[in-house]
Amino acid sequence: MPDPRPNILYIMSDDHASHAMSCYGSRINRTPNLDRIADGGMRFDNCFCTNSICTPSRAVILTGTYNHINGVTTLDSRLDGRQVTMPKLLQAAGYQTAIVGKWHLGHGGDADPTGFDYWNVLPGQGLYHNPEMIEMGERKTFPGYATDLITDFSLDWLQQRDPNRPFFLMCHHKAPHRPWEPDEKHAALYEDEEIPYPETFNDDYSNRAAAAAAAKMRIDRDMTLTDLKQPTPEGLTPEEEKKWKYQRYIKDYLRCVASIDDNVGRLLDWLEAEGLADNTIVVYTSDQGFFLGDHGWYDKRFMYEESLRMPFIIRHPRSIAAGSANEQMILNVDFAPTFLDYAGVAIPDDFQGSSFRSLLGGTTPDGWQTSMYYRYWMHLAHHHVYAHYGVRTLHHKLIYYYADALGTPGSLDDPKEPEWEMFDLDADPYELKSVYHDPAYASVKAALTEELHRLQAQVGDVPYDHPSARGA
Ligand code: CA
Image (cartoon, rainbow, N blue to C red):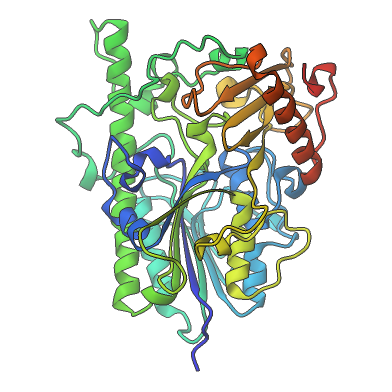
């Protein structure tokens, strides 16, 4: 009798914001193959990461724990593979396991992938064109485009697997991470179009804490020649130049996304051709969101919506109603418990997330989470974003910029004055005006501050040691 447990095909890209997916109502592109997953399953509209940066988010997904627990707080961290991870537990339960593509959790010794029968990963960030990859510890260079190659190697592994045992495959794309290098096939896409501009393209960063204005991720000022791939034309007004840079950036970003979409289509076609679509859970997500010109920015890191929100679409015809959408809050720390739940594997007590399998079945459990804890540790590194933590509820967000490296590797030791920010997400969905000091929000502020400290204690993190950390 064949093993009834579902296969799990987990496809994750790097920095793909949900507002560049047509199943999320994108105004700027179409993603027909990603839409096949959403149309055949469930779209989550409130999936959030607990730390909006590549390496830490990946560690959360693998371990089911927050970064202060799994030790991967910044890009300089390595994942200690001796800890319990979700792939190890699936492997021990008889799943065939593999990871292909971006790893970005360190290399060598305890940092190499563990819990995988097969691994073939990019070193560090990896290259878009003719990438070097590390296949089971051996470095090799492959001709071709990373997104195609990662899909090729995923299909190769699927083809040679034992069909009598279920599989768990993590197909991790490098794209559409900076520097957004498209392949030949998509290089001319959008060439004669003007991509629409986001509502907050000309944000002036007023009415917020100092952190927003201090960040160095502005399209008009901070993009490099590597990002833009050609010199800025002369004779443009500042406004024209900003628009020109946005078009250069967003078109290359969307071209990289188009290649992902094509390649996801290849995997879906293969599942259908093999008769595996019915009992394979297919997930498409990204390690965090991204600013697509929103607030005049590229990049991520902030607890603001565009960066905090992850796309999450999931298909499994046997257990998930086609074409459904869910507004409940799920977090990247919940992925591991959910996959273990589907595999019939006991969820370890020290995993911090919760399985959302009931949500997939159309039932919201009593007491399901309505708030989440966030922390970004990389004070001032790379894009001059202040270290912060905060809480998001269904309607509000409270952020505390403690703005201190605290000696964390991957942060810069130059403390700034701590500051609070609060947003009414219903009245101000783009987070343009902090209401932290607005007397009309005094009771909301008190409740959110209490909730922040409750969640912080619950996950085992500690408040910043400063008089202002208790809230004003
Ligand atoms: Ca990323």
